[in-house]
Length: 347
Image (cartoon, helix red, strand yellow):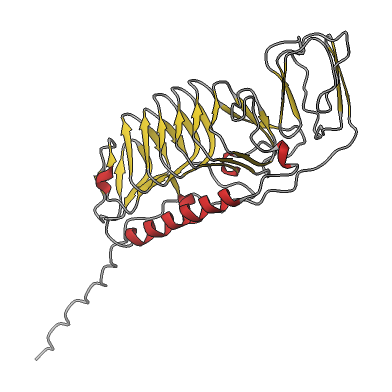
């Protein structure tokens, strides 16, 4: 909800008295998180109090005095992790191609299937002597494709199936309760600049965009799922920031943040994202953009001087431990040396 009124009436549990000022720019994000956008001299005042502010709660703003009274509190039901299976061994995994305008920097494995390695462009690949994977100065990890030598084709088939399974799982989750607090949030719906998100399953029937930073707040065990029926657009220099909720449970982990996107994702110049991107179509990362997470696309991914770092799994693991999926085959053991011939018997 956004407020831009000088007369003060009670709206959705938020009460502003007649002598209040500076209500413009106060925004409420699901579930019950309040923040300042541009005004009211609330610098340094934390509006997230470690509890949910429900629709029946009251907020009174008088000049620069902030009073909160909680009529009740409610915990969001825990969100189960989205299991990535062997797709979690990849920083970038797509079905139809990965392209970069050098120089990108990707920490983790990248791969394509069922398309061949010719759909991986711009990386200056060098085939390993085993022909089971390739390497690149731009990739700290292995590059894999469906046409490499066994066992790579089987591994890639399974990884793509796991990608598809994870996408279906994330897309099938129900919005957290109360549903209205987690559905089509933003003003207008889908415009989420400056918003703060706590643990839960959020869903949009619209496109989603933000031109200014957003915040994901919670603990290292919290799960966050963002379901988007349309496209996602991140403005230049906008950031997703992971922030502790102050309860001593650590900071949210990128491996526990899932973006399930039915459209495409476009990440602007020097923008930064956090999380696992499960995308039905394609992703485009513009110059200087970065991601702490994974790009798992069912079409293609395009990078331009982009940095991608695959995160380790968290305590609520949704992916296997980070490791190269393949290693060069070991050479066969050398046969033991033959004993020297016995000397001929003496006459």
